[in-house]
Amino acid sequence: MQLDIPAGHFAGYIFDLDGTLIDTMPLHYRAWDAAMREAGLPHALDEDHFYALGGIPTRRVAELFGEHYGLKLDPDLVFHAKEAFFSELQKDVRLIEPVVEFARRMSQTHPLAIASGGPRLIVERSLEITGLASLFPVVVTADDVKHGKPSPDMFLLAAQKMGVPPHECLVFEDADPGIQGATAAGMKVVRVPSRRI
Image 1 (cartoon, rainbow, N blue to C red):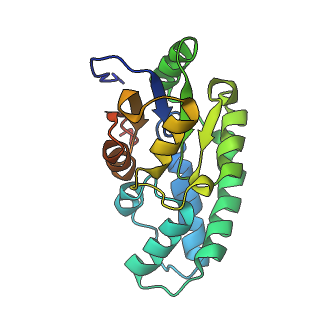
Image 2 (cartoon, rainbow, N blue to C red):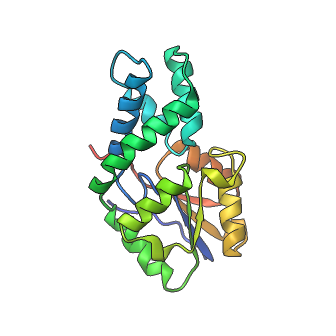
């Protein structure tokens, strides 16, 4: 995978986690599929629809799946079921090496942050399991903002916590909601392909 890093000076770097630094999207798909079947979905979850919602906070994804499939469901119950399934799969996570290698290099000279639509507990566990926690002194999750991706709030908070003006941040993202949020925050973005065919 070749990363297309834009030219220019960047004072800080913000990374999405799932599908950007760690290859968890297939694991998240399996966890969502199991949780939605438990909630009454009679068939496999549409994979394209799942990937289109990448980066959106988990509870909101549950609501959107309910609307999409016409299911009456409790988003909190589905949220907890999905995270329980994902916790069992987390040990199988793999690093996305080109992005991790770039982060390791930049961490020696620049502040780095995570901006993830996942809940803090799961995000911090993923960072610990993969040995990435020490690279990211700033971790912003869906629990820290009122409006998740595609809103710019998560990225603006990460920039603020790093002490870097938003226009001097470069964001690494794999999904459209995150790219929209970073762009709305006035930041340049590197798209990381999350689906490896």
